[in-house]
Image 1 (cartoon, helix red, strand yellow):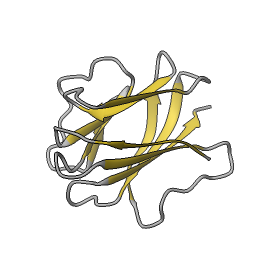
Image 2 (tube, one colour):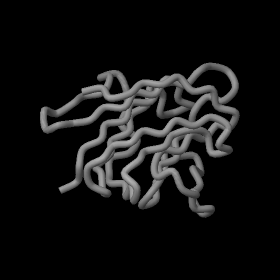
Image 3 (spheres, helix red, strand yellow):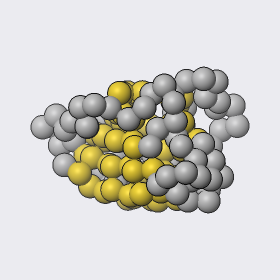
Length: 130
């Protein structure tokens, strides 16, 4: 079930998803479409040209699917200490925060429209990690 959708204007070509606290300095994309730590995922996006379309889905066990033309660039877990998911550019110019409730650890799948170049659309599927 889709729980949020947002169009973000980003000034920096890297979008962060995860806990609303500081992002570790040692995370770097290094040519990858996405990279992650225990609390954050970084995704390469198109900066300063278009609005980045981000859709958040919550999987209640029914197997929520993203856009089938998208490619999954991350499938793992995130620790969200205060049960909030923040997304925005790494410079914090644009930011959206959603309270999720539930547990602190979430299974997260991130899919993008263009894994080879900067993405213009991102789908995020969240499921409580058991």
